[in-house]
Image (cartoon, rainbow, N blue to C red; front, side):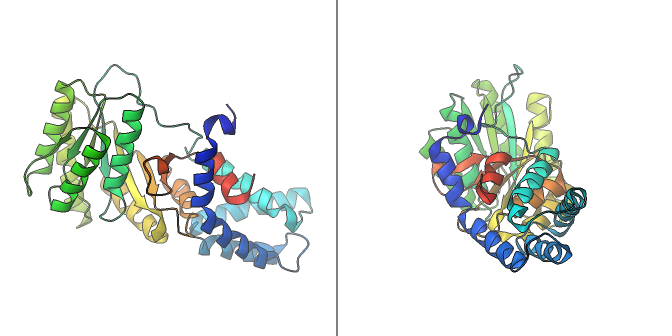
Length: 318
């Protein structure tokens, strides 16, 4: 299936616009890195290393990319600086493919005959967790699925209110309890209600706190156990939402959460309006967990399935 079969013109424009600042930032730095040079030599590679690190790609991922480019230069004997963008595009696309970030038209709920499919959404406050849940609900409902939401972030009244607003906006039911209720109890009720009503998918919000790793792990374990009591299985997906505009801070959050619980997918939000889009490359590489969605704006359709070819092409040119 070709690129334009996967992505409509509007989606491509959204992606291009969302990554515009990152692209401008990276290209400006690369231009300075190769200024006055005709071929890729040690100085260019040193400068490129600095470009990638300061573009929030991360140190370890940057060193891997530089190593790959060094091997190509050694093999080909001569690589001109004009070829550098193309080589970067190829090596980064290859890296993303190796690290479970395959091209996708959109996440499909597996047809296993088991209902509901349970998605547990985790992440700190302010990363766009509730908004991501609302947009996911919209996408699933648009695909003809019966969707339920669970407001298990009972520590903030605003969190419950926000998810209820999204529920009304999208037109899907929200299961909630009083402020301060046991989050595991809300999760149980959410899945039980969804199951009783033949729902296809239930998306459960959780408290956006990193109070400490032990407390976080205990809380999420209780929620998982509550889900298991209803379905007989652990949640199908534990999705970590990260704010891409925070750059390297997103790496730290990913490290904390992946130590505390079994994260199975990621959504990286707020990439529009920031020059820190390189963080997607580093996080995908370092954590070996599929980046399933990227957030590129406030609109319902602006949460896009992550497509590594589209992402790299938009960042470095097709």
